[in-house]
Each structure stands twice: as structure tokens, then as C-alpha cells.
Amino acid sequence: MTQSRSIPAAPTVVSPTATSSSPGRLADNTVQGRTTIAALVIQKIAGIAAREISGVHSMGGGASRAFGAIRERIPGGGTTAANIAGVQVEVGEKQAAVDLDIVVEYGASIVELARAVRRNVIMAVERMTGLEVIEVNIAVNDIHLPETEMGEDVPVVQPARVE
Image (cartoon, rainbow, N blue to C red; front, top):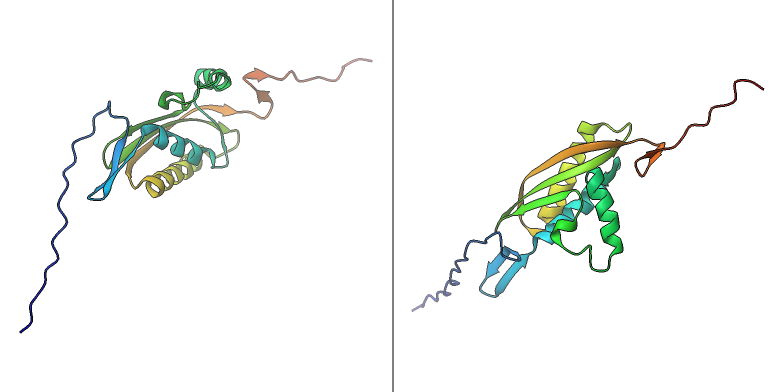
């Protein structure tokens, strides 16, 4: 006579809904423990993934780039989620949405660049966090011209017309 042994099923763990005030978002909840991911982590991943694409000059609008440069020089000033220039995220328990503000290099195809940035951000966030990225919105705020640096035009030296 053969006895069948049944393995007890793992208990189901019901997680509470994450609120916007919670420090981290639920990425994994098992009997063995829970993994949460802070919104700051998603922002950093998205920002790095966007900058990896050739043709992205910088992130953020002019004012946010200026304040970001100042903030980075202050000890402890660049450590909060609001300090990732040009990257905003909304993170739920299983999904994330990303908004990017970028400055592109002159001559780059903006449509192709946006597709490449979107694809890279989605792959990086989903691969590293396991969260589904439902959208990546990209706003191109400026074009970086080769002769401009730090928002100031470099004067063009004209050869003398008379000797």
C-alpha cells in the first residue's frame, strides 16, 4: 500500500497597499521576507540609463541643472529623491512610471533618441527592480549647441575686414 504525501502549500501573504508616504515600495513579499525599493533608487536607475544613450547631453531644465550643480557642492545636499535633476517617478507596489526632462546634442534625431532612451530606461528599471514600467514620458527641454557651454554663447571672432 502506497501512501501519498502532500507538501503543505506555502501560506499566502497579503501585503498592505503602499502609500505615497511610505519610504519604500514593495518589490517582493514572501514567507522568507519582504524587499522594498525606495523611489530614489528608481530615480537613480532611470537617470543613469537615460544618460547612457549617446546624444543625451544632460538631464533637467536650465534652472534644475543650475540648482543641481550648486546642491552637489553642499555636503549631503544631493541625497534626497527630489535632487535627481530631470527625473521624476511614481512607484506603486508592482509598477513604476518615469518622467524625464532631457537636453539633447545638436544633430541628434530627437525621435530616435527618445525611443532609445525609453527602451534603455524600461530595460534597466525592470531588470534591476522587477517592477513593471508602465510608461516613460520624455520632455526635450533644450538642444546643446557645440559652441555653447554653461548657457553662454562663446563670441565668434571675426577676421578683420580691413588691414
